[in-house]
Amino acid sequence: IIWVSRAIVGLLFIFSGFIKANDPLGFSYKLEEYFEKFAAIFNASGLGLLAYPMEWLAHIALPMAILIVVAEMILGVLTLTGTYMKKVSLYLLVMIVFFTFLTFVSWYFEIVKTCGCFGEVIPLTPFQSFLKDLVLLVLILVLFVFRKSFVSFFSSTGDKIAFWGSAVVAFMFTWFCYQHLPIMD
Image (cartoon, rainbow, N blue to C red; front, side):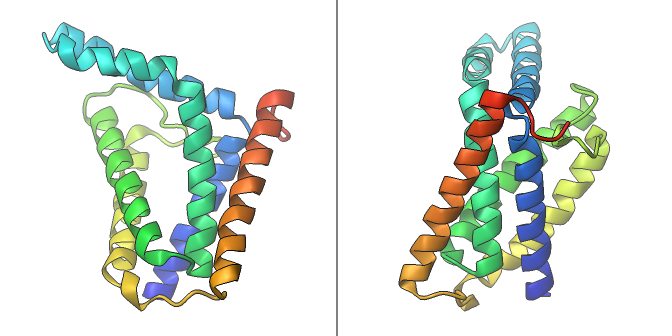
């Protein structure tokens, strides 16, 4: 179950990151939509203090989108290779808890109609996205619980190369797509 969890999580994070990295501007629009809707809900319910951070986050949606997609691809590669799994499993857990909460709120309160998890390649409803995130949460919890038992495929130097290599490739691909429009439409 550990290997299955590792393969599914790693490949899904790489795939999801790659799809969104292909159009980081489009993903930033989706993030901006989430933040603006949350700000409007907070303002309407008298929680203006919580609306301010959402409005601020809407203004930095593009750098946040780039950071998220690069992180997803890096975490996917490191999960597959077993590199730095103590830290990687924690980062995966934090990300999936955040996204599970976001997709739950989006589904339950009908905030947005599509989640943007896989761009427009695989359009998911908020409910489908929430279910996907629940499954991923279970798989990532397996990785987190057994994080100390992972052995990297590489030496210490190889781990550094895996991290920095995936970071550079992920960032360069994302930046290229941002500068030159999506490679695949």
